[in-house]
Image 1 (cartoon, rainbow, N blue to C red):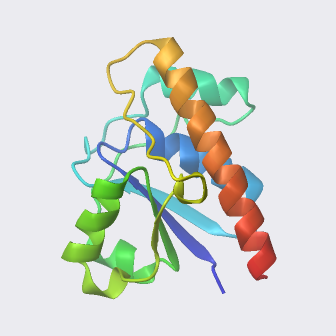
Image 2 (cartoon, rainbow, N blue to C red; image 1 turned 180 degrees about the vertical axis):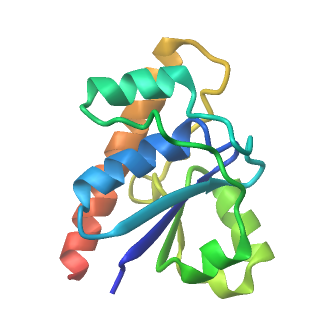
Length: 145
């Protein structure tokens, strides 16, 4: 049973906060949290990420970036990354993660590029990929239950 979902990206201020917000809305009975491999610890979500999520009716303004820690990986039933490099990093660094780490774009066979310090159009493209990945993941999880 998948109850705890950890979403990971690099800085934990753009992609993972958006994915976390969408997953929390899509899977209200699950615990969803996020972290970054090289987190900008304590920083809020990027203003463009906050704006895009607000357009979707999701408020991520209280988000603060946190670093990926071993307990997060071990407690999670599912670890969701934004790209293959992040997936490989987690699997190599945390032996207990094998078999529970997946890219958000896994079902579509794509990575989600980092929009950090890019313009709103790039953030919109990133959001679209995240939303597509969340939809596919949610459908997959519903089939498992």
